[in-house]
Image (cartoon, rainbow, N blue to C red; front, side):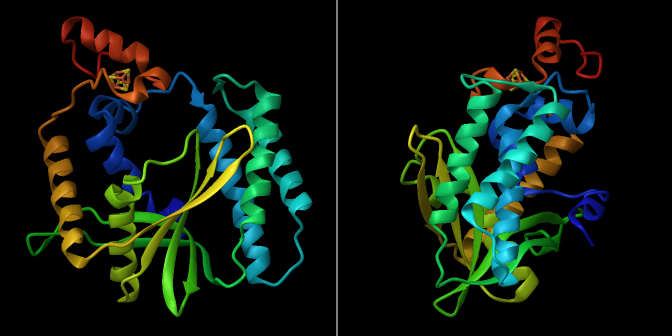
Length: 272
Ligand code: SF4
């Protein structure tokens, strides 16, 4: 099944858990339960999708041993960005549409130049749907998602997630990442092997930088995933949503109007 087909059933994903538990539960409510139409789409989201789709093609070509140059990859990205930027109602930050394109081409170039030829490609875009276990019992919703890339490195599986970032990551970020926990758990559930996880991050500096952040997880850490998913289910069951007004997400929140209404008078979130 494709990711789109799997997403039709009730499920958890890493990004949904992260959004509900770590970013803002009210924003999650507006998006997932109230299903409000967002006022805009973040430029980072649209551009990040173009970056991912281009890397998909770079690595698929490598897997199939087909020629695909850096120049061709940058042109593919450019076409995708120009098309996507016309289709979406994008909220721009400091960079305009042309500057975002130039930056994106630079990120593709640096990602291409940093391909490690010693890594054997096993899968590009591997979908997963695995049960979530808490205190020995299955939760009702599975964990669904997609590994960007799976390679074999030094005889062992390595799950790679591609990121773009405005800044370099803090040294501890990968070690604390719930995504690394979720992905190592999901891979083990699907294949019966404990993988390593790595974040390959293209940093949007004036001269782009490419950095790799490895993370490994022990089976003990997987318990946390079950605990957090069960807490998320309690939040949904009891309607425990509230605004996180100091969240970094507020500045780019597409539900700011609904949030202001909600904060004014304790109106029901549905009314907002
Ligand atoms: S504006 Fe901030 S607090 Fe309000 S819903 Fe959006 S992210 Fe949450």
